[in-house]
Length: 87
Image (cartoon, rainbow, N blue to C red; front, side, top):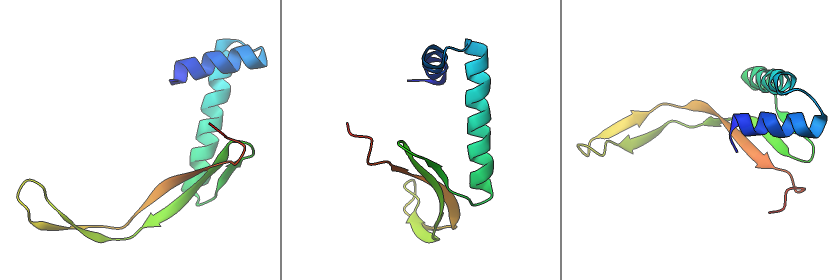
């Protein structure tokens, strides 16, 4: 499912116009990104939790020439699915 299909599904389920559904989706995404940038978790009950984790610095290998390279630490977003999601 891509963003356009998600907007259409939201519009149909919530009885909204596609424009209103797109605005709502974009506002929700922006709010989640802003919260993650502040270091907060985003918990969506029944769906899952987005959180920020620190990936440690490590040594890697350049596949082109086999030389070792230093990979710096960085922050990444992690998602943990809710138990309510059963596939």
